[in-house]
Length: 389
Image (tube, rainbow, N blue to C red; front, side, top):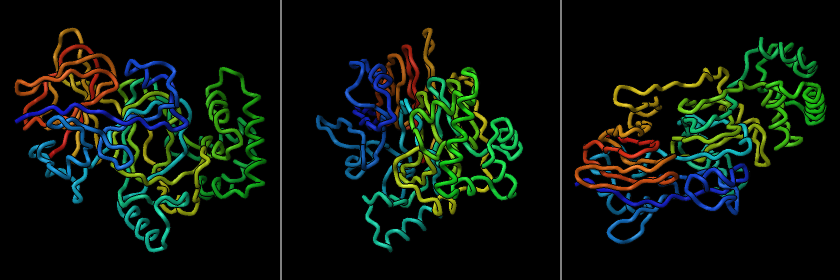
C-alpha cells in the first residue's frame, strides 16, 4: 500500500552558503548561526535524510538496508548494485562563488579510485581526488536567478577579451595555438601573479555598470588573490532565470556563482578543482579528465506541459525530475514513479490512495506510491524525483 514518510533533511554549513535563504524558506530565525549552503535529500553517508517509520526515526540508509521495498515498493529495481539510491537531491543557497571544478566519467572515477586505493591514499586525506567509484553528472534548476560559469569561451571570444582588457598573458597563450585551459592552469606562479595583477588593473578601469567587470569584482572580492580568476575570465558566464536548468556532464568545467537552485546529481563526492578554493588542486589530474571540447552551456528551457509539469532531461533512464507550480486552485498530479517530493515555496497537501501529507517550503517527504499518481494541492512549488524500475 502507498505510504508517506515524514522526513528530516540535513543542512551542510559550507562557507559559501547563505545565512538567510534556507532559514527564510523554513520560517526559522534569520540570520542563521552559520552559513547554510546545501539541504540534502537522500542517502549520502555524509548526511542522509531521516525518516519516521513505525514510530521510530531511521536514516534512509538504514531503511534501504532493512526493507527497501517499504520505502520504494517495486521501484527497488532502480537501486544501484550496492543497494543505494542513484541520486542525491539538494537545495543550493549560494552566497559566494563555489570552486571551479570538473567531475570524472564512470571509467575515470573507477580507475582513479582503484589507483588511489592501491597507493594507500586515505579517504580523509586532503590530497585524495577520488572519494568513491561513481561519476557525478548533475543538473541545476534555478529557483531564483542563478549565475554560473560553464565551459570555456571560444578562442575568438578570448581574443576579443585580450584586446579589450589589454591582457598580454592571454594574447601569448592564444598565440601558441594550444588549448587555452591547460596553458592557463600551468602558468608558473610568478607569471600567474603578474597576469592576475594585470587583470585586476584592467577590471578597475572598467565602468561600474560593465557586466564582465562586475562579475570579476564579485569573484575576486570573495577569493582575493586566487589565480582561479584567470580561469574564470576564460569561461562562459551563464545566467539562469527561474525554471531554467543547466546540465553538467563529466569533464565539463563549471562553477556556481550565486543564487538559489535545486540540484539533482549522482551520489558522488568526486571533484577535481581548478581554482577559487583553498582546497587541494591537482592540475595534472584535472587536465587528464577535463573534456578538450566543452559542452554547449546554454540554459535548458523546460516549459510546462498540458499537465502543468516541467520535465527536465537527465543522464540516467532510471531517474526523472519534474517541477510543479500549484496555484489558483489548480491541482497537479505528480507521476506514479515519484519517490521523493521537495517543496521550495508555499504549503501543499500531497495525496495518494486516500493518504495525505502536509508539506511546507524547505522540506521533503519520501513516498511509496505503488504506481499511483500523487495529487498536489494548495499553493507552492514542488520538485519530484522519480525512479524507473
